[in-house]
Image 1 (tube, rainbow, N blue to C red):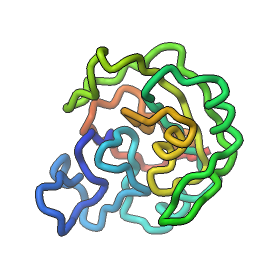
Image 2 (image 1 turned 180 degrees about the vertical axis):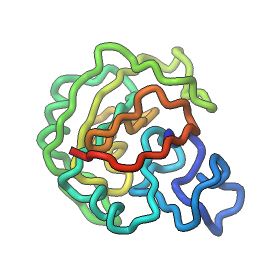
Image 3 (image 1 turned 90 degrees about the vertical axis):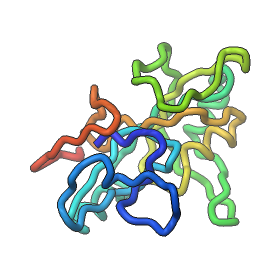
Image 4 (image 1 turned 30 degrees about the vertical axis):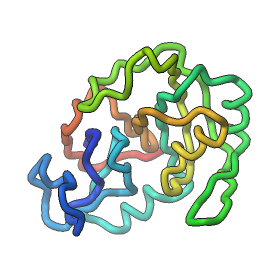
Length: 182
């Protein structure tokens, strides 16, 4: 599915006033998100009723690619630092991220407008970067861009393995029988 901004990657919660995935589609009983996208993140989210599939997808051998709109004009030095791995905070400890693939996107992706505007041009320029990781720590991509001095303003997961977000509209769901994660 294309998880829209403002929804949490859960079907039940004890938190009031949270938008849940179950409000978007009539999913089969026992459906769970494979990995998570936080409330402010968007993009490709795989769902399953099979715990083994979930474990397989969350493993280190499956790449996850994100497009991050960052505050400012990101530098080649900042991109190189992310590629090598950076120290981020994780549950009160320092964690060194694994090397990743990262590069500047020359043109802004053509995503649908977000339901809540990010900010206007008076606050300065922004840039987009592609970041592909093989792990998925809590808010990892956001923490990586912040660690190199370019906080994330918008985050969209565009690929998991060989599965692409493509032209899904936010909230759209497509059932897939067999998929190749590459």
